Image 1 (cartoon, rainbow, N blue to C red):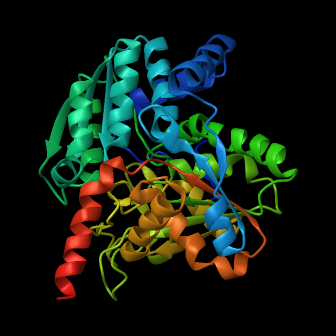
Image 2 (image 1 turned 90 degrees about the vertical axis):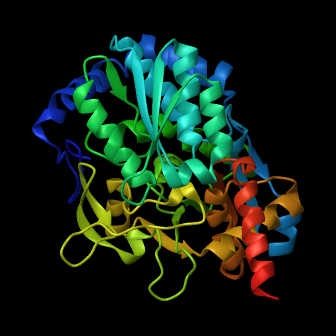
Image 3 (image 1 turned 180 degrees about the horizontal axis):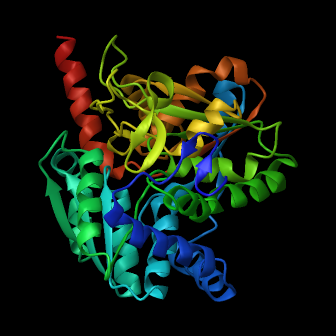
Length: 394
C-alpha cells in the first residue's frame, strides 16, 4: 500500500468538510496505534474481554464426508458472536486516546452495531448506530441487543434502506459532530485510513490462524476461504498469508438468487471500477456510474462495493473471488449446523457453501474457513426461507 492506495484502488475521495477528521484519524492511527501503551492495552482487551485467541477447529464429520480437512477459524466464539469486535475494540480504544466521547457506527447485519455498542459501553463512550430500515426489521434481535447495551439506533428510511444508506447517514453526522465523535467504520472500505486501519485490527485472525495451523498440521493451510461483503473478515483472514504464494486465497461473494439479472452483492465478479464512500474500488453500477441496489439473504453482505485491497488482490491475481447463491448459503447453514453442531452466520455460510460445491477439487487439502460469526441472528431469515420454499413446492 502506498499512502492509501493498493495499485489503482483506494484513496480518499471525500468532501472538503470530511478532510479534517480523516487527517486527524490518520495521524492518530500512525502515532498512537503502534505505541507500546496502546498495543498492550489492545492485546489485553482482546484476550480478557473478547476471549482471544479464537480456536481453529477441525470438522471431523464433514472432513470425512468431503474427503478433505476442513478447519474453521472460530470467530463466532468471540464476545458478541463475530469478528467485528476485533475492530471496534481497536477503534474504540483509539477514540478514547484521541479524547473523543462518541462512537458513531453503521451496521447491516447488526453485528458491527452490537460490537460497537459493546466497545463503547466498556470504554465509557456514547454510541449512535445507523441502520437501514430494512435491516432493522430483518435483524431485530441485534437491534434489541444494541439498545440493551445503551446505544441509540437510528433507522434509515432513504434509498434501499440497507447498509449503503446507513453509511451515507453516518458520514453526514460525522461531518457535523467531528470534534466529539469518531466514525467507527465496520468494514475494510471507505476513505483512507479506514481500509488500512480495519485490516490492522482484523489481522489478528490470520496471525492466530497461521500459528494454530502450524501447530495442528505442521504446515500452512492449502486454501483460506472467507465470505466477502465489504471485506473485513476476509482481509483479516488473508492478511498474514498474502506473502505465502503456496496458500490459495478465496473470497466468496453473494450472488443473490442466482437468476439472470437478479440483484446481487458481487461487485468483484459482476461490477466495474468506480468511487463509492470515499474510495475507488469495484462497484455495482450502471453504465453512467449510478450505484445499483444490492441484495443478499445475508444482511452483512448486502453492499454494492468492496474494500479496495480486495479489488487489488483480484486485479493482481493474488486472490480469487467466486460466488455463492442464497440457496447454497441456506443449505450450508443447515449442513454445518447438523453435521458439526455449529450454527454459522448466513454471511459465513457463503464461504462454507463454496467448499461444499468445490469439494471435488479440494480432495486431501487442508482448507481453512473463516467462520466470521454465529447464526443466532439469522434464525428468523432461515425459517422464512424454509416457509417460502415449502410454499413454492405446493
